[in-house]
Length: 202
Image (cartoon, one colour):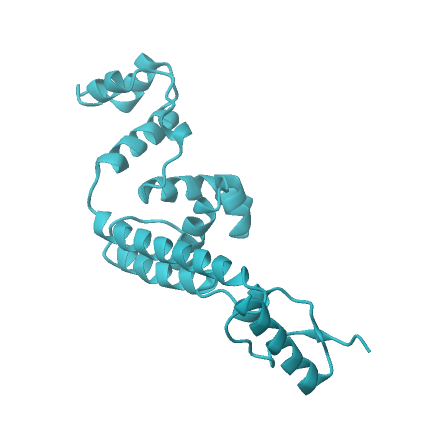
């Protein structure tokens, strides 16, 4: 009851000041996002720049593109969709390799048409890639992609950087939860009337 009284008092205050009595934009418009996507991507891009500058892996993608890749991956987009977001659908293979290097795995990455242990044993046997691919019944290029997945899964070189990126993403998720919580209150504890959009009802 106290909250309802407070809301009525605030609405009456707006009416007295502006002559407008109806708020037509949700509180998300007023509060804004506590941490927008661009800010998150810029922070991730700084980490990506460190990774690239230290030579941990090479890619034609720029730091900000890698940051957008991470954001799009967590948004549920596939490699082709991510490449399209980056401006060129032909980058899908480049996106896939960078994604795997960043340990952003998909279930499909590990669905190999042969026994994984057998592949690893053959790769350690001293045989050439062509010989191993023939034994497994796949093309050398396909074998290289699967080998890349296993190598990156086991490589811990950039794990400290990936933990930092994970922290940024978790902070973003927390921020979004806080924003959603804030929008549940139709007026909130305080409203900036210069940002609230009103309509005349007179």
